[in-house]
Image (cartoon, rainbow, N blue to C red; front, side):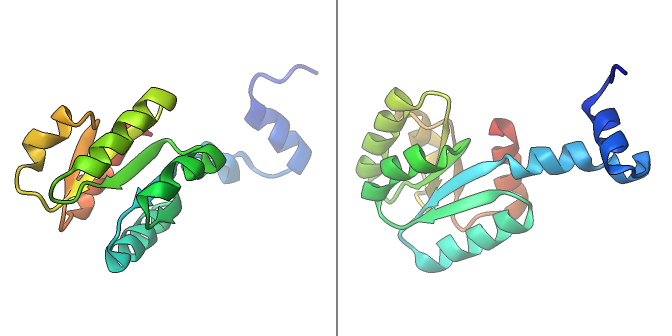
Length: 146
């Protein structure tokens, strides 16, 4: 017997109705969205983690810059959200390292800097999210990259 789709094989194996499997591809896709969130503000980090996990993202929160590269190696995210801070120097340097070593990963700046809409491109980021953040904007930006 030849199966035209993976879902046909799963249907046969599990002996369940096709209606139950309609959301199966969506569940697989949602489970694959992996994000590292780095921010020095514990409250923001926890809030963003909860919001993203509720939306079926797999989230790994990171407080310190120095832990981001090793976390990327072990977690293999699609997106890294980095705390840009006011000067942006540390995050810009880290963004360059990430882009050089992991070019497939989108790096997004998180910032309360009023000029972030001008600064993020110069620093090498793929996009930015202003703090305090708008949830719809957060998901809109992430959907571009996952």
